[in-house]
Length: 150
Image (cartoon, rainbow, N blue to C red; front, side):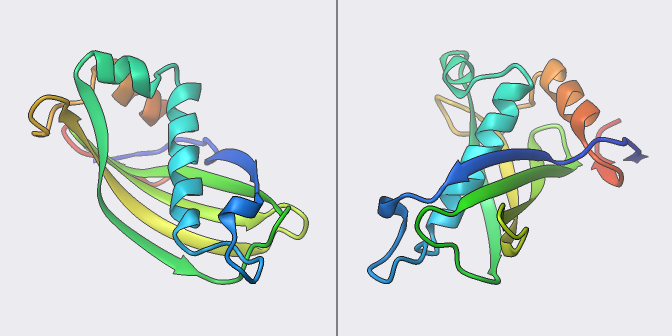
């Protein structure tokens, strides 16, 4: 089933610090994954859920799979805008499309897709997301969101 929503992708801004770069002053490739993780965490926080509270309730989110494509380098002191858009919402998982752009010129630096699973903290076995969380993600999603289990 497809649901249609008019929302914009969530966006989080961050700055490139010295610790994010290699000896040449360019962001080390794996740090883009960290920037994207932070955007997903901030999106969850904006929806009213914190990772620490969820963990205390026995629920964790783990990355099942990831794909990244690098287009241009970010450098020390660049301000970045990192988007996180849910493209698929399942009972126990979310698929995100994400982009990292340089704020100064809106250049696309990196883009990726991530499948994130909801699991029990004690066994790491799949667990259904709370319905309030699914509803919150569905309400924030953009057009073309694929919703399973409806």
